[in-house]
Image (cartoon, rainbow, N blue to C red):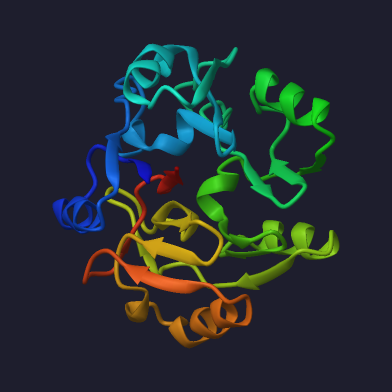
Length: 233
């Protein structure tokens, strides 16, 4: 098992992952973006499936060298821009057969691949779609974003809506639960922090239990938004 994670993630998170025998690949540093999102992997690379990923041109060489050989890495056509929402080309989410994102700013290589494979597109206003969605299954997700909650619910996706403030992001008032988590296989989710410290923990726990997803805590602190934990075999 491998994970791509923010190179500035807490040492405790990295240590916990290493103890689980997970191979750690640290993210690229997009030094022209503002900190701390300049090292968030979900602004740099997107996994289309378990063995195929698309990376921003500026980060392509780095990930080509860092990823195991069985991963097919494709070079995207857009580099993340310096300001929102132009930095969101790769920050789209896949929930079942649905691809969710602000398609005006999504990378064209990514959308072409998904279109060719017959995925359905759900266009939303939120550019940081992947950051804002904690995906827990083929038809379920957790978010703090009201717009995502309404759009996904209208498209038959089971969504738990949270309040903002339960996730920390250095330099910002708050982070997003999608950026603080990542699915490990089909029935486990890892959180960069202790989800039990979240004010809506009981709601989260019950929602995950409903979808038969177990929780792994990687840090005994408040949840930390590190630009998603990208696990793959």
